[in-house]
Length: 439
Ligand SMILES: [Zn+2]
Image 1: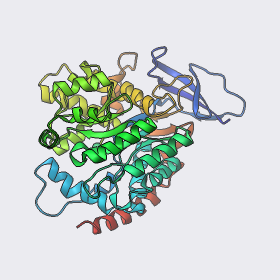
Image 2: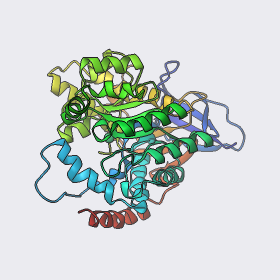
Image 3: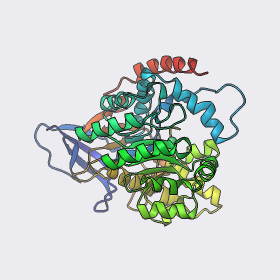
Image 4: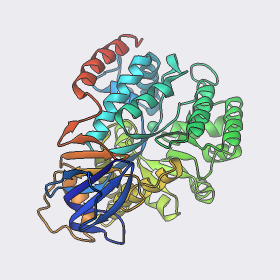
């Protein structure tokens, strides 16, 4: 088993036993953390990484991403600007995803994984769509996660919008594949676009696979008002009631956004212990409203943070979550600690339900996912003060070294597993080819 000793680091463990070590060491054995302390005993021959006084913390977790959205950067849909969220879906996302081929799936994914490594993110829960090449698309993505060295929980966006039931077979196949492999680096959920593009017939099929495999769903819920209106008009019930009717609420499922949920839906989510993910930057961009983040947390719902394909920068997502609540509520007292806890604690708890290995703390037995920031605090960094450094210091500090599953994926700013320049060059070609197929 390989051993890696990280020396001379300021360590933010996020472990209550020893939250902050001004100067400490971390021993990694294989893919796990073996010891953290002021000094730790390392076996002879261990590789030594001198952190040079930089700040080590647990690798960040993104609880909702769309890696394929990398190819939207700089693309402008022709015609009048979309005026509603449904128009944004119709004019941009449903055209872009339809234009992706397998090479596009691969390179859009790699682009986002490079960005994740560079921002200290080591675990991603992704939601993928490529309806012109559905079958095998999750394998193509799995390959990119394995090449990069990151952990990924993948799913395919089932929807009836192109072909009825598109994605059911791909999700089922991939769930069974990852369950059989059981290595924990790449796992799966059952992906659903949103209830408004899913018939009862497709929902029945999804429910049958989830019952049989024990998998949860990963679904957009009440992102725009049109989703609730559609559900009420077509099914005479609200979205969460419809999802629960098919047995799709529960501790292994992730309901994303939930901006327009009513009280009864929040209560179902709390009662069924369903996970939720907030994506503030995306919500602002799509002008769909502000999630009632504090109300959801008050109900005891496990609410994490994602980027929804906007970026791969998780500290930015937490910072915007904090600012957006204050701006919306007109209350400068709220949402600072909550946003930080969502990123650091709740995302770790969500990952704990999606992957077999515990992560999110620098402590013995945890997965060795570590981000080392080139950050020299200019105010005291002590227990109880870290959140301020996180949102107002580390948010713009460069990540020097990223370690995932015990492997160094970036050392002193240089990627070790991926060739960023080659990926960028190939991605530019692929993106242009993808755009040329949009009609
Ligand atoms: Zn999304």
